[in-house]
Length: 335
Ligand SMILES: CC(C)(COP(=O)(O)OP(=O)(O)OC[C@H]1O[C@@H](n2cnc3c(N)ncnc32)[C@H](O)[C@@H]1OP(=O)(O)O)[C@@H](O)C(=O)NCCC(=O)NCCS
Image (cartoon, rainbow, N blue to C red; front, side, top):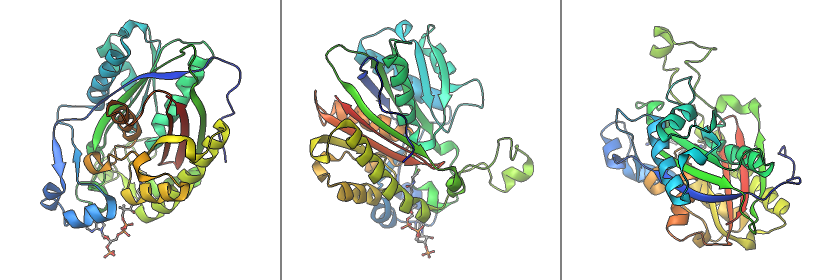
């Protein structure tokens, strides 16, 4: 399995604080029944989703990420000026450029940070965590802020029932630092397979199909997904990535206190948990309330798991993800 090398010499790196933000507006399955030909029964039985949050028209991805970042910094008890690096994982940036990370930097007042966006679709949060991990481990920076923020409602085709019922908006953030006496991030596995990029994409608006009246009327600016194909790959790839990440950390599934899988479909989550042998009680789920928030799903999930006491000091946390590209990742942390 392609992956980053095992950790070399360097400092251990911990996620010292998390934060998340969900927009106030709730879109229920009953609301969707009025928009497309679907039913609460179909959505719940096929996906596990009951409701999702939708940003207000004036709210952009950076607004969601900003609030999550403020909460993470408050939790860490550090000032914005102490942040030296901001990475934003997103497929729904406010605009092509400047980066959403620069917009958040300015709004936060994190004037000592260098900033960039990172795109690995749903896997973006774990990719960004691993990049930040390496910068902090090497001593290049002391404090990194990783944000995963998505306004999926801005790229969903609201006439396509096979995708519009699945996604939601939200943001999560994490502060990374080295903390003496803590092991923190123990292992990561990252991978990609671009040969399957056509199965999940947003084809329009970029240099391949720049925006024209034709591309817009052809609907190229909305998300396209071959759901059944993605489903098959997601289960197998996430299971093997999780197994490999645990092996590299010298651990087994029995050591895992909390697994946070990507929240794309309750059936995928159950299949992975079953394959790995993770008991339901140790598997974090928020898909019923949030839907699939792409990169933000794991970031919000980690924060919610910490705040609700599902993760305690010294617990082994396993996060695993799969998304467009295809891309995937798994990360093991001693909390
Ligand atoms: C998208 C997904 C929920 C669809 O579930 P599925 O069981 O595969 O359903 P199918 O696509 O095979 O469709 C089955 C039927 O339901 C219909 N259907 C699709 N969406 C529907 C909806 N919202 N309401 C009612 N019926 C719907 C289809 O038209 C199809 O009807 P047909 O049999 O008459 O053609 C599922 O494939 C999935 O979760 N895929 C993976 C998504 C994922 O992992 N993404 C990760 C990266 S973001």
